[in-house]
Image (cartoon, rainbow over all chains, first blue to last red; front, side, top):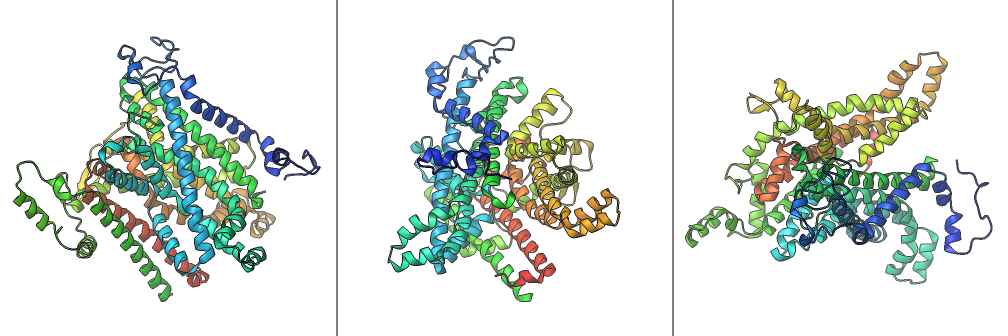
Length: 316
Length: 322
């Protein structure tokens, strides 16, 4: 479907930027309305989350700023709503907009960190298994099989429960995000390991790798500089889609009460809190975090879907 | 074929042993069970008695073997929380979960199949494109969010469906069913819909992809040339050829639906296994957690093995694959 005629910059590209702008990916990005909209929304969500301390009217972690007299205010456009509580307040007088911005921050950070950690685990396992084969491969892939033989959410729940138990009690509150990151990564690494392993087995026997081996390049270097770059494309697609999954898993764990504590709420924790007021008529406490979470995951998934279609030549 | 079957079953047993090992390690890591069971009035002697009775003074290997043999017989010990037999506890909750999962599966097939066919044969129309877009949203919505939104709309705003519990149930032997009473059926609707939504989008996308493939094939072209009516080609010739992967996926997903039901069950306060598990997690009721883990994995592994063997029966080429 992609035609070369309308591509800008057919001349020899020099800088990274020029190369990026001349690429297929950029071309199909500027020609896909949904990808551009999704990327814009994602950029806005990330920026507002990053600069939450500057934008948010209130610091939701600072108990001194919470005003019990302003508890359960509806959004400003409803009767009884008050500035600056744009989206209303919860039962402790916490500004919903601020809570959501800070919550998104936590969700995004945990999502990114768990994708990074599961990439690290999965790609290392895949490279080592594919390159060395034999016993190591068998053990690693068996561990992967067993991980896959259990639903991801179950693994995440178990890991987070056990690790939290192992932490001394004064660290549990602070370490909550680290525990979540570990739990989510351990439930998601197998996919990367399998993809990378399959690709590594293909690359291992190619001439450039054999040449490097003959030159006595150390295995570590061959893996990192020669094989790894050739396995990255499918991994990139999987990582984008898994970023959405990671955010969802985090939200689910927090919703179930085994994730982020109410003291530093992620979007899932906010939804958990709001869920208790579903029947009291204070719909805004639950609905706005829900909308934000869905928006975040939907745009990430749209981008992931788009990237998969672009990078997979078979689907064109 | 016999070799293949045996190797598959051996494989499944290995996985189950690994899961049992994991459950056992969790047992060990989660702290001293005696401390969780005693109260202040107990003397050191009482504690030692409990320790001896639970067999905690034996070696680790002995304890693991005992755990596995007991688990294989269905004996997972007693709950730390209320001292009841774990298997009885789970047995009481199992029918609720299974009914929920089966109804959700049924809904996802009834809705997902026609939608998949529609999006394939009317490709490019605005309504199929929006369905396709909606399916991305369907995949992105976490199931607890779906549950909350359903409750918000149908229970809070419209007030037409119950939002928690199972309604009245009727006991048939050890099985309790909510399908036979009006309140039981009403209570089932929202949770089942919430649980099926993800499954609907999966089936719809799978059927669409398979249909697009089949519609390009020669026998469909030939059927067209023969002048067979279109709907007959779509539903009799093409859809039939898509059903195999759909049936496989549906069967295999029953396992993960049972696991994911724990989220839906928490949202709707549905008294199933999943809610029992979440309560066990909050109370650190290790025997219940371990039993749930083993049972879910067993269902998962059994379904997978069954599907593998069935495939090998149908397609002899697969018998040599590992």
